[in-house]
Length: 418
Length: 110
Image (cartoon, rainbow over all chains, first blue to last red; front, side):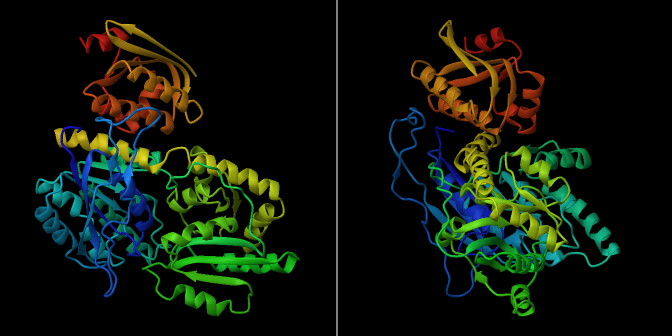
């Protein structure tokens, strides 16, 4: 790999695009571009609304010293970040995405293409979503090596909560289609997942031989631990994400109302983020429904530079999920900022996060009182809040995304060689 | 974690003992960096490593990457079953050269 630098393609959403996984893509691509074995990163991204455009080089363009623990790089020189080239070539809910991505790849000729995707990456309508997921197989069929980083798998998605299936019959039909699509996705050279259970499922149910476990990785680059101090003013309880499908805030607002009735301390609920593409107007409707609950702030879209403030100011980060597919990018972010977290008691989530070294308070996802009690255990006990924050900080900083990217590059080296 | 380095026919052998995890990774990282100052051919003997996590794997990934950048290699030998399972789960067993015995690993460099 050191002899020839790689031109790596990434099919993804990317800021300022607001599709899911844009945050992960931002950090992944930034880490990738800094690797000395990467000559160029070609981003096959979704088309932005009129007036918006991708920044050609949002990553550090200063020379990057990649010395690690005394080891210099191959020629002993500093390495400059590889350039990013954006090829907007797909649209959410378009049926032509696979074809257009293939054309983009054939024209730009990357050595390998990484797909940063989940099951609804290409649409909330079933046919475009399914057709888009054929892209990794299609590219490979046409001679472009592909690695699919799959953030969830069909078997662990609660289709009803995610807004995909409104009846049991429809759910069975979608599961069947999901089985077919998963089989097609597994035609990529490699499929990476971030949860051990996903590897087991894909191997057991699909007989897959090309699935690997790769850590999610932490986004943060700084190594100094946070202070755990909170700003003056009301204690902020924060939730972060794209809401309206399986991330719903009604229970949280009701729990917050209970907490305000009980506490003399000033509190603020910060709902940071936007509607899920699958649930337009959801937050606006919630705001109307709970207009009588004071001290609730809806931030709307949180830009990359505002993310640290949102997290740093929070006393606790709440995950009001009705279903979950396991490890969450937001959980990793909360850990990076040393935050105490409040999580739903769903499936084996407690075990999953514990395996990754995190800790949290848990609540019954349908019970506002249970959620209020869980938040209370954090805001009533600052020492517990700090202890949880410290443990989550250590968990999040276990493996920076920059090191996870090294894993991918080693795998890619094997694929390209073969 | 205990680490020890020795030389067999120009090949450096690093013996690890204990858990290779987030707490011990730094120490192993430093040992591999030390060894790399004098060689680009390293065998890591894992016979006494009974646990490895993602941070531990990452230390080895970093090590193999740096060795290959210097046109050498870092190879592994004598993996215990629980450790081998983690390599299989992450498919890193396809990335690393892994040998059943230390002798085979050293011979691979000859």
